[in-house]
Amino acid sequence: MENDQTRATITTATTSSSSKEADHDDCHDLLIASLPKEKGWSSHQLYLYQGFWCPSVLIREEMAVHQHFQARQNDIALATNPKSGTTWLKALAFSILRRQHYTPSQNHPLLTSNPHTLVPFLFQGFLDQDLTSNIAHSPRLFSTHLPYHALPPSIKSCAIGCRIVYLCRNPYDTFISAWHFFTKASDSLEPLSLNDAFDMYIRGVFGYGPFWVHMLGYWKESLERPQKVLFLKYEDLKDNPILHMKRLAEFIGVPFSIEEEKEGLIEEISRLCSINNLRELDVNKTGKFGSHFENKALFRKGEVGDWVNYLTPEMVERLDKVIQEKMDGFGLTFKTSL
Ligand code: PAP
Image 1 (cartoon, rainbow, N blue to C red):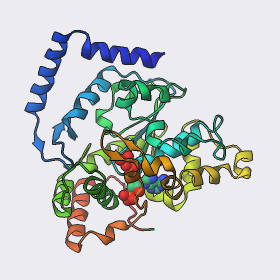
Image 2: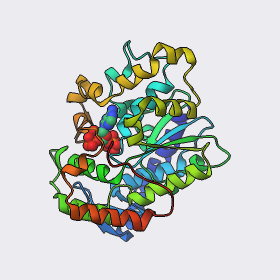
Image 3: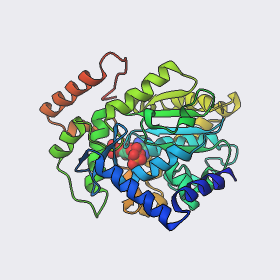
């Protein structure tokens, strides 16, 4: 019900009358025209909005969310840099949180729906009617690529208990994953050379980036407010999924019981959400998400250290240097191989 109200508020704010809508469009166009811009990784240009790079179509939606979204006490937000394991985190969090309703072995929604459908992005969930029903359950579960500083105020609020789970992936593999995705995943986008993409990435020109601002924003918050932000690492999840699934379950308020552990439920959920399982499902082999991305593009290799097959020693040196310059002294470290 509140979702409907939220949607209604947003809809009213953007479409109450045609003249208002035209004014709104003009303001939006003026805003966009005033922002620094760069050639994007896809056919969309990227604009520097509130300290992060974003295509103009998403700026409008993120603005609406920023202004109108009201977090609830028990909301759970999954936050990631693009290509850091968002799909995996969505599958795990959904399966862990809703395990009273769905057991991994019987008609589990993940067998017929892509994780992005089950756990929508914040702007989709509140603006798209079809997706709204997926977050109608309580606690609500949604995701965002927004950097910490740009989150809606009510999510960040100290008074509100909305919890945030951040999944961080080493910048080397994230870059290679993104390059594959944007060059190969879509039939309608122009291919971007590895060198050009790399130059953009190390300058911070990457959706919702710079990556160092994104990671450090959530990292600092997780140190200051560990009860508010759980900081997970993709490489740790690959290395020891059971341990980190237990941390995730505890943090979102549904710890595994001793009986569940003994019955092997954690292993079952881990298998259900594994890339090898999800990749082979019909829905992920054939379906599409968004206007032009195929679900199968979300399940490439899912490995730690694939970057060694692509980055030259010179590229590694340049990325090392950027990481040192931008991130040194904060205590955030990366595993680049297992
Ligand atoms: P998104 O930002 O478009 O949602 P996201 O899911 O964050 O993408 O990242 C995709 C990466 O996660 C891919 O990495 P790769 O290109 O290095 O292979 C994808 O393979 C990986 N991935 C997807 N599902 C899983 C999973 N279940 N386990 C581990 N890795 C996964």
